[in-house]
Amino acid sequence: NKQRKVKFLITFIYLDILGLCDLFIKLYSIFRRETVVIEELVKEISSKLELHMRSKIPHLIGMDISVHFISSWLKGGSSETVEILTIWGMAGIGKTTLAEYIYRLHRHEFERSSFLEDIERRCAGQKRALLDLRRQLLGDILKKRMNEEHNVDAHTSKIEKALLNKKTFLVLDGVDNSEQVDELIGAKGFHPGSKIIITTRDVSLTEKCALFCMRFPPKHRKHALHGLSDSGSLRLLCW
Image (cartoon, rainbow, N blue to C red; front, side, top):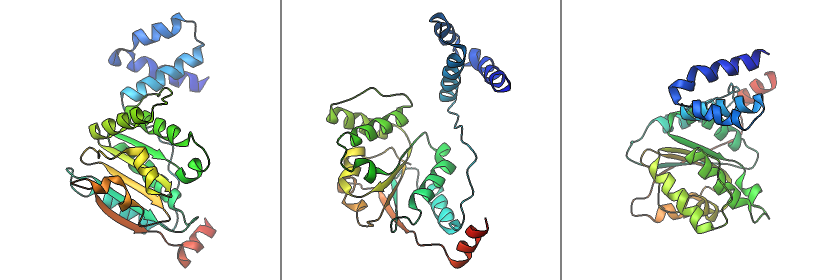
């Protein structure tokens, strides 16, 4: 069909350029189904070319000022410093929606990126949740699937090392205590030029994190998110 032909075309254009012929032969040699082979090759090619296959970003209504402010923050600042932005506001106000929109809009501008969503809910009553979040974060930064890791200290050490080596855009969404941040990213810091967004209901939470006990703590800004204006509400209703 048409989709299969497109995938085949992408595959064969880049095979020689990227030196993936061996991968192609290996996959076929173990009699993988044709569709599985194509998916594996497309994923590998995309990873090597650092392509960000983003679906069309939906229009965000009534948050123009916030989008402009955060986009300017991401593009500004020194390439030699690390900066954190706390987006705060009441539950249901749109913090996650805004953070995800910004992430999809700007993730390609960084060497590595990761979006950890709804941390509070995922950690509530689930002992393995932080391990799963760590594995997701490390996989995003290293750009490969991570195996099970039960040694918490070893996992944290790998994350800290990875964050120091690459300019990263990280979103920690729905954080409800500073320990979650410490357990996810440690206290060694980030590669210069990295940007971190934290969404939370508690604006004081961020500066309680271990990162702010460092000799040179990251720069910190705060952005309060309020409800839609009357005009924004009307635009949303008419959309």
